[in-house]
Image 1 (cartoon, one colour):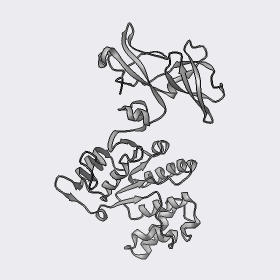
Image 2 (cartoon, rainbow, N blue to C red):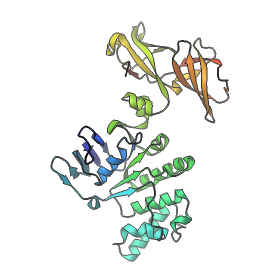
Image 3 (cartoon, rainbow, N blue to C red):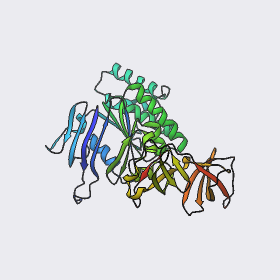
Length: 359
């Protein structure tokens, strides 16, 4: 692997040993891959990024890049940040207001001969779609354009690894998603290995080949987006990614194989479901995503609409079953039912995810 973190821990001076900012994080990225760290505020994702950059000392573990040991807490060794060939892009762009766009991009390659530096800057400007803007001042550009300048400046020295800390958080939602896709394309075109930090799930899904969900300084799961959504490793990941609820369930052996009894009906043909003895008496909780529940007026299972949120092409309904349990459902927006109305629903669960009760 190009980048590997092995049991990395970070503690700030003065904090108790049991209050690590980052604790025992292990992950890896292949060359050219884009990784994303996501999680709530204060979960340690930015601290972990700073540790990779060499801006925070390790309290435990090792960081390697392309076979080179960058930091090893056990031996007290650490390559200085300026010798790691790692570029960084921040959420506030950090552009020099008194320099032109071209001079901002060329700031990190001043050691190059003048002609070579000019060619590098021109190539970076074209790469980020700003070939026309080299002579402008940063304040003359939009927020999205300024972020592309910051990206070009970070890429100009040819870093082995690029770290990006909430780079789109100052932009509006539509621009964030579009720019995330553009930046992914630029990084893939240049073959740059990158590690992002974000709090936005859609941004993480748009960018990442691998995504890590962090909580309380620990990495709960490091996986592709599909697995995080459909095969969450922990309750926290299941709650944090997407919309869903935990409903009481029971795994039993039926005549045709395993079945899971749930408040919304029986789930069958469960190739990856745990055996009944995985939980006491087979009793567990099943994760029901909003897209696991289908509106079907012919179904015998009825639910009362408690809340509805219009999402354009669909509603997100919050439903209360006759048995008292709450579920969520994505329903096409032309199914515009009133709050308080009872509708029929049925399960359409392709990935059955269960957890122990009471977690």
